[in-house]
Image (cartoon, rainbow, N blue to C red; front, side):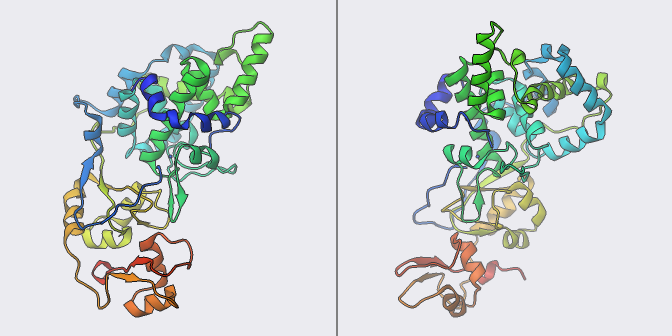
Length: 383
């Protein structure tokens, strides 16, 4: 995707993002409910979305071919961080192990947009590739979005879902944001856009204005910025230099296959990850790790478009989700009438208030007359 394509895609966000210029960047758009939900589930491999042919090799070979800023490795600040990482090789390896489910997919997304491969390594600096990371300032997720920035990018935070923690949604949002800022403020300069990603466009723009007033260059490498931002690109370039030639730096990179690690399954009716794990034999921890945005352990079509499953379990999961459930003693749906409460509905159908909340994406106990509630089917419950 070129900058112009990205801008056309994100033009509706431009005014909101301009207002966020002074904010530090702390993403899944709120999914529209699926009317007439059925028991027919569909799945799409993420790699199919890329419409690229896979070449032999591993993720690192592919990423090396797309690194574009290696000439920066001679900068003194970059050298400082190269030496730091070389002195802590186990830390580098542990971060890369956390990146294993995501690295190949993120690298392909970056490559598809024509961006430098270094941008795929931003989560190394931002969150140590931990999708559940939260900072003391309120940033969250692999890409560390602040709440306001995530909201502007359409990453919803409600009813047991946080789009900032959703790796697929937040990756797309981050790449959109980086491309749009580069075009909107910096004539396509991605290094300045990354500085603004870290410190906010207002901070970077003021630093450029001050440098220009002093007759100094206004590129990233000559600006006076907050200390964290001064080290932001040097850290990124340092880890890129190590990945480009790990042997020369004394670090043995774990191999990551250049192949799909997960598939996505459309959320058409409520799905509880624990019940799905019990039914399909997929490890519950694996499902939770692939779906960190589902903060209450369940997906509802009103808030989440898809769930991710390990690709090797795709067919098994689809088979279980597509099998009609054995009806419970009560109706699958309950229409709220005057005087109903969640506790009385739960008692009527042999369910629990918490199960009904999770299956309907409810935050509290408020319901209204005429509302249709999905009642958890006992055939999906853990045995």
